Image (cartoon, rainbow, N blue to C red; front, side, top):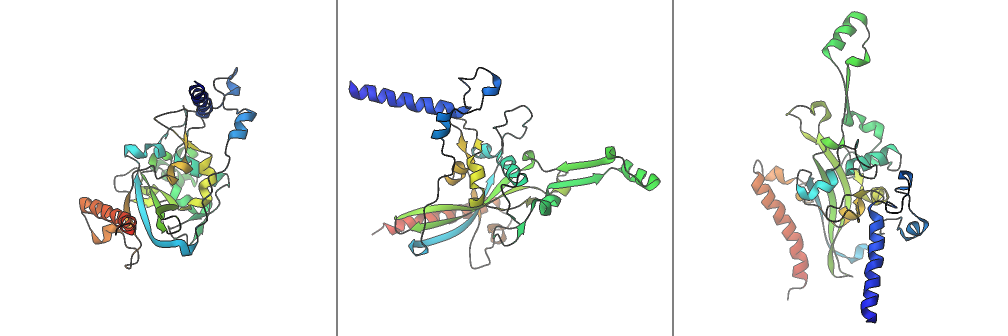
Length: 297
């Protein structure tokens, strides 16, 4: 009897905590202004920092392989990173991954941007504006400029990359075997949003381009305070930091570090999408097999 009562109390306590995570104070609010305001008890329970990575000594790494993956956003498993794209009629706590990153950049919380996955050259928001915004003049504006030397604002078109335009994310990470703990692990190192070239974004000829790269450890605090939608239980949203660190996405490898200058799969398996997917699976299996071989006798 005592065990059953303790079990019931535990379940009720967990339920009380998880309900409060969906939208803070929604069941206790007497006015709409009180929705989203956490109680003091709730604030004390919150973990305001992302879970710290444990220290890994280089001497404990028995094996490692750097890989690059594509997370295509039109796949159902990757929808939590893409939606919502229209935020006009939805709560301010619901934002896509791209909006979270851009908000962090504009607010100055995420200062360092990079132009490639090797983090060799830093960029600022001003440096990458040309890749995010296109300003063009209509034909009527050109005629007005030729005749009067001025252009009315109504003849200037401004097109900016938004969450709707993001087609995929590219992720760089390191697979490594920790001999101290005896297991294969993964550490995410970089992430980049990818969209069509802003200069050709409304045409069918635009190629996909990496807008910028972010060193993932620098963005963890921002991503920890931003939640994605949990389709299975909206009372327990999952932070983007947890979502990415736990590899809750469907991605395929498009490159691994190799002797050929880290060439991409499409460079040696050209114009054959099926064979490129098979090659991606082969790389994954090669990494998994290392851990299995460690325990084979």
